[in-house]
Length: 327
Image 1 (tube, one colour):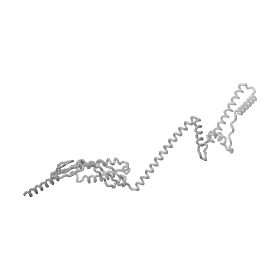
Image 2 (cartoon, rainbow, N blue to C red; image 1 turned 180 degrees about the horizontal axis):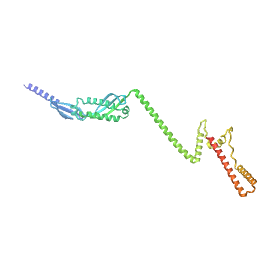
Image 3 (cartoon, rainbow, N blue to C red; image 1 turned 180 degrees about the vertical axis):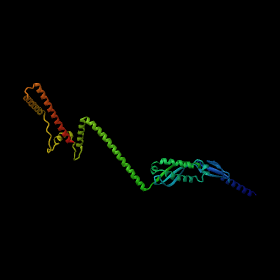
């Protein structure tokens, strides 16, 4: 009788221990428990010790930590009809455990599918250049769209990043040629700008030197000093053009053409004028013999002026001929 009582007590104690073990749960700090009692959601419990009614309550654990979801590579055709293979990564976490359990069967799988379809649709609207150079804007747009779609499930998408963009090899070669052409264009533009600036500085230097001949002479001497310090076998000796002008003017005729008459000297012109005046006086006196001294002086002055005009015209003609031959 006593043995049967002890056995019954032991059985009862074992059943109580088993029921206690089945009704007690311990949750970590990042976990929450969604409790269902007879199929109806009761409350969200945790973290710490959670007591359940044996055989009546059921518990679903939900982690609140950020989940890293790798989106598989997706074949995308961009707006400019270029095939690309793109993969991404999504960071999200559960902010409402009740909605994550009740509103969707598997929030992890659903978020993955939403991320894949959104990635294809958004990148298909962008050009290849936009896909390669404006990833920040595309990442923000992807995060916004995915977060709006997962919000009813109690899931918060914090970040979406495009990891890699794979393009065909032919397109890579074409882009490399385009980049090389762009670099060559920039180099030519920079070279042209440098030439322009150098020409401006040379023009300013020429203006300064032309205002003071001494500066030009000093520059000439400096050039000679630099040439003398060089060890080259060939030396270019600059010679001022002013030293060659008399020689060029003296040798501008080759002897086979008709030379212009030489310019008469001042003494010869004066003697010729005096002789013409005396001849005019003699002729005037021989014709009438009655001219006064004043009339003879007036005739001489007129003859002198006419002779001077003829000499001046001849000089102008010779100078014009020389300038024409130079040009």
